[in-house]
Each structure stands twice: as structure tokens, then as C-alpha cells.
Image (tube, rainbow, N blue to C red):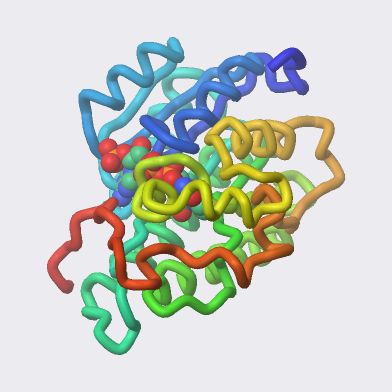
Length: 271
Ligand SMILES: NC(=O)c1ccc[n+]([C@@H]2O[C@H](COP(=O)([O-])OP(=O)(O)OC[C@H]3O[C@@H](n4cnc5c(N)ncnc54)[C@H](OP(=O)(O)O)[C@@H]3O)[C@@H](O)[C@H]2O)c1
């Protein structure tokens, strides 16, 4: 990252920032001069990520009721400000037809993928952004709004996050910009069940000839957070190598019954 994009001295919270897209985003923000506060569930990885970024971190599940407040307070205590919030952590469970979806697992998808981002925005707004302004980026998915046989809960929750993004953009301007980035298939743990068995075939079907790397998404997120994007709010930026152009030819292996995703979040018992 050669330009600070006006992010030098800013403070950023990134959820799910110990691997994959979140880690790439946290690194890219730090490279652009921001101080970074990270979170994820595994405490060792959080400690390592925060250490490598010379930042701070909090271990916990974004879906836990107290986590958003504790995370935003940590950022404010450590850096005295909270200019950027990237809602990246998500779960891809429950996997399978919606008719079989367990109510607890369905609620978990909405708790982690929709409610937690809202709670984090509320805490960031009350703690800093209402008075000083800021930027929020929600990580959605190119697949939101598309229909798939086994990803109904994930897709529906991400479609809700897309709408939440637009609603918050309407509520929080002019001081706070709220946008989303929707990645196509990216080489991370969450999507391993799709790209590992079929990367060659999938890459060949994409206009840009390859699947995404976490850094492809991170560059777009940092740009949206920057002054370069200061007249953009309520937008969704597709970062998908052209997946949406030829979507009909790209089906998750799991959708053909050959692989299933590893759970990214343990299912809580129904409330
Ligand atoms: N990879 C793709 O192809 C793709 C495509 C479209 C959209 N996306 C979106 O991109 C985002 C990042 O996905 P990824 O592929 O980078 O996933 P990933 O490689 O599985 O990384 C997920 C990160 O989030 C953390 N995390 C997971 N659940 C959490 C929870 N409940 N609370 C707190 N932290 C949690 C994980 O650490 P712990 O396990 O330690 O908590 C990890 O740091 C997600 O919003 C996903 O929906 C990904």
C-alpha cells in the first residue's frame, strides 16, 4: 500500500481479523497508517494478530451480547478514537435446505451476520462517530440475493446485511459513510470447501481467470474507508473477478453434494 489514503492516525476496528479477508483488511489498514483493533474467537490468534499489527485485540464471539461494546471501548481506550469499523466476521452455517434449518442455527446466522454488525455500528456511533464522523464497511457476498440449494440461511442473512448497509447510510449521513464490499470466491478457510475441489474449473469460468485472494478484497475496503471515496455511501462494491457476469457457470461443489463447509461458528443452543 503506497498511499496513506488519509488514514494515517485514524483508528479502526476489524472483526474476524485473525485470518482470511479480515486479516488482510487489518494489515492493509495498518499499512495505510491506521491503528487497528482486532477481534476473533481464538485468543492465541487474536494476541498474535494484534502483536503483529502493533495494535490491540479482544477475543470473543461478535454474537455475544457484550462483545460489541467491549470491542469499541477497547479501541477508544487504546487509541482515543474510532474512525473506521469493518464488520467482517460471519458464519456460513446452517448449511443445507432451509426446510431443514434448525431454528437455533438460523438465529445464530442472523445474530452473527446481521445483528452483531448493527450492534457494533450502534456502539461506534455512540462512542465516537456521532460526534466526530467515521466510516463503516460491511463485508457481504456476491452471492447475497442469489438462490442456492444449500446456502439459504447465509444468503438471506447477507442480503439483510446489504439492506442494513443502505438503511444505516440513510440514517447516519452526512457524518458517517456506510458501504459494503461483496467478494466473490476468495481463497480462505471459510470457502475452502468450494475452491479446493474445483479451483481450476471455477477460475476458467471467471472473466478475470482466477479466484480472489484476501488482499484483492482488502484493497477495495481500504479505498472505501479513505478520503478518495468521500462521496460514496450506501453503495455495494462487487470485488468478484467478474463472477456476477458469468454466475450461472459457477456452482459451489457443496451445492452438487460433493463437499460441505466446515462450521465457522459453533451453533448455540436455541434461546
Ligand atoms: N471467502 C470467500 O469466498 C467469501 C466470499 C464472500 C464473502 N465472504 C465474507 O468475507 C468475510 C470473511 O470471510 P473469510 O472467508 O475471510 O473467513 P475465514 O477465513 O473463515 O475467517 C473468518 C475470521 O472471522 C473470525 N470469526 C468467525 N466467526 C466469528 C465470530 N462468531 N465472532 C468473532 N470472530 C469470528 C475467525 O476467527 P475465529 O474462528 O478465531 O473466531 C477468522 O478470524 C465473511 O463475512 C464472509 O461471509 C467470504
